Image (cartoon, rainbow, N blue to C red; front, top):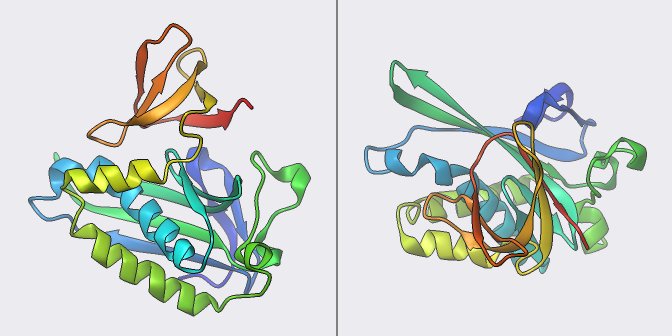
Length: 214
């Protein structure tokens, strides 16, 4: 757990700053069991569900912006970074980095943002205790992890997807942008879209950026 970050990073090596005393910035080391290893693509959903369900218990209508953000009222409040550590051809562990904007001071200036952001303090109208939020996220993580191999896990993730039924644009570095409406998730957590021709499109994890078109 870091109380402050001056050289943190998010996905795609973007800079991630955590002003002192304003946010939750922590990493978990997950050592997958034999049963969990075929489902490692779901780990980002595990982390996102743990955060989203914790915020829901605070009375906030949290949603998951695929693949790795948690939103409140369409604004980003949490980012997640997943990295695997390999031992030969086998995954030794998965490092899950989570950043949550708790106080107003954690939200960067608007001109530096790629997506609108908010904080728990802004959404709740009062400053919550960071350690209490951390405790509840960890408790939710432990509980939800037991379901990671089940169909119910994907259903719960899908139910919290942001922009379901709405038109979005998914950008990648390797191909033209994909436009379609969000319909759900594949078994491995990949995103399902439907394009203007009614065709189903699957977007895999990787170097992707999702933006609503509304």
